[in-house]
Image 1 (cartoon, rainbow, N blue to C red):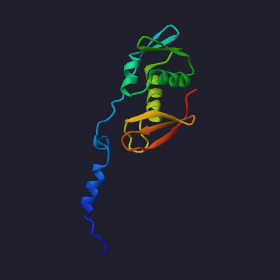
Image 2 (cartoon, rainbow, N blue to C red):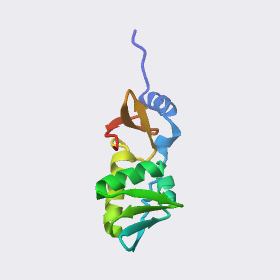
Image 3 (tube, one colour):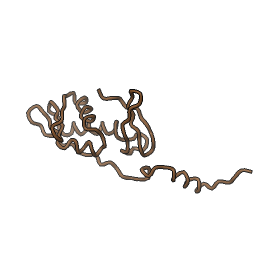
Image 4 (cartoon, one colour):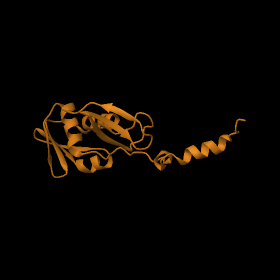
Length: 139
């Protein structure tokens, strides 16, 4: 004879097997980057603070922004310095694009992700739902 299953008991059993991060509803508050133009260089103040909020290496983010802006970049203390004049709007737009591509999970839209490399390919792996998405390597 077939054993009867109680839907609620099975649902509760399944929920206990999920990680706690799935049930948290905290949102990532997108940090705003403030820029200062001096001569032909743009300084992004407290750049390392913003990258630590999104849990990414500041060199990785800076490399992406430099490529998107068509500029050279380097770090000076906690600031990123880009060759050229770029307003806050432009930098924040490119930064938001980085977060969409390399931070937020495509399935559950949570920021609980890590960048992992497997066989010369880079993936964004979600710690909350387990989804994995291939992303382009920044060159």
